[in-house]
Length: 119
Image (cartoon, rainbow, N blue to C red):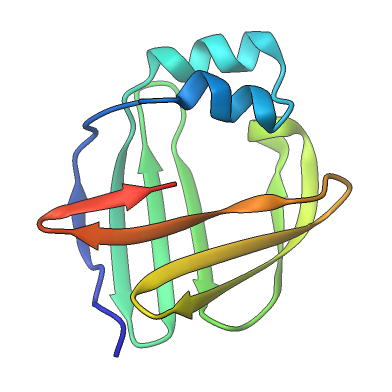
């Protein structure tokens, strides 16, 4: 059974963030701004329904979804695109796959101790 991720997670590190954003082809201006931010995450996890809020001083982003159900995600504020997104569990990791104009996009979230890791 996957873990319940409900909680508030404080920002800890942006290790490799510049390389990650560059690999995603995020433009230089957005990368520089992103590196200045120290976003926290607030997660509400109720069964298969999840709300993930990314909170920062510049911009908040709310992602609400049902695990295992594909939905359209609007990433206009991130990189100007829309995509079809599906989030599933792989053992105890939450895995997101985004399909659209840019291939190989997505992320993984998991718990290590009291920390939530975002990759």
